[in-house]
Image (tube, rainbow, N blue to C red; front, side, top):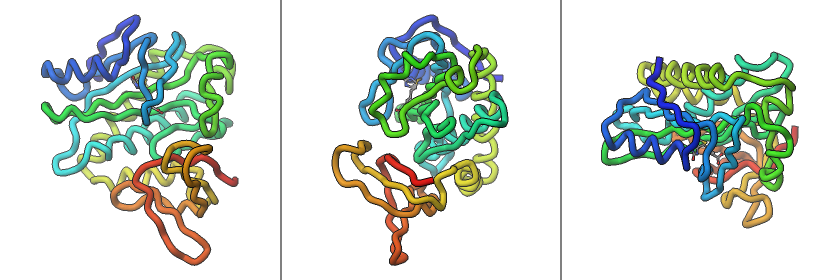
Length: 250
Ligand code: BTN
């Protein structure tokens, strides 16, 4: 099992993990905090991190000759697999490009991968809304797909330690699969765990539904580099290397 470093409170587990990576801590180290004062999300967003959520950063070695961004798709699949193990079968769980995890079509987890180039180590930061009541999720209201938590969808209280163990175990297992079988195996699992493939979606390169151009099309899956492939009625394909899915017709 991984080496877990636990804190009551941190600014950001990703910042602490980067510090530890620079000090020579090995791959497999996990930084876990009960809450964060300066939790960070993708695209300069903040990540609201009150007690009750799971906030962790895992050090992973990028695969030789491959970009650290592979690990972002890998972590998305790992979180989806972990959530499926932790919750009843009746809930719908899906990865959403590039690496969000949705529970009943609302965002329950976000992932921020950063590369510490000096030591060639990736920091995989994961925020999972476990025991957060609805009031704590209103800050995410304006984001595409909104937000939810284990508690809101399933009721009761969940063990953060069990949730952490499951997320870390799934991530390390997939990291081993990726080492052995390459990115094709992760891409296959990603598409298999994505409820959006084959559906009509809207993609925003700015990451917002109210700013910039929204492009509609059918989500065809991922290309070799992990880009989102969107098809139109004429049979043309377009690859998106960044952005978010802002809408999906189910
Ligand atoms: C997103 O915008 O969806 C990514 C959110 C990532 C949040 C996690 S919480 C643990 C780690 N520490 C951070 O500051 N951010 C990540």
